[in-house]
Length: 263
Image (tube, rainbow, N blue to C red; front, side, top):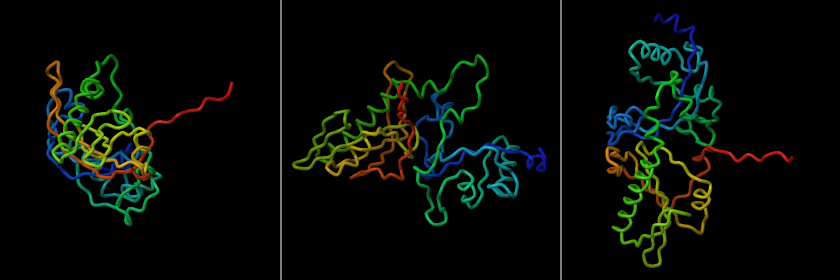
């Protein structure tokens, strides 16, 4: 396709922030990987979704600028192979309506970003197409295996350090004591990168309570063998946050409670 034609086109652009450096994948994570139970993308990095921009111009007057617009054109003619471009992301943040000064902070407050859902990323399904990939992600049996494996790793970690560990589940996952010391631990597990985790409002309020000493123990890149009736989870990379209290700027609402009008 000629560049002049591309210049007249507009694209939908998914804006992410890179939150973790390159690492070697240890487990299937993306839908096509999970569908085949195999690692197809061995080199990964952690990204956090910020916003979805629609009708983005691919020319020098658009937020991408001419260099990035040209890189997208080249990528489109090379079966999606990416190209690295050194550019100022501020025009993209401005176009997305995200109040941030990239030159000053080199990061974005998560609570000021709209984000987007997995459904917005998926292409439309052809009629009568059987579901693939996503079923593995939502599989409650697999999710339970991931949670238990992450919790087992957390228990082993604290016990090695001399803590007595009690599994609770609610209102938090682990209650750890060592002499007069006490720690309450929230545990999260994922097959992907350690960029963000889902929290309930109770988990946030509990961690922010100054009377509680709370740790966050995250196990990412967990591998799950689903070929047997009893799913087996293994491996994983640990991110351990001591004395954890989530800051407002690092939280983004994903659900709302709607009050119905009076009858």
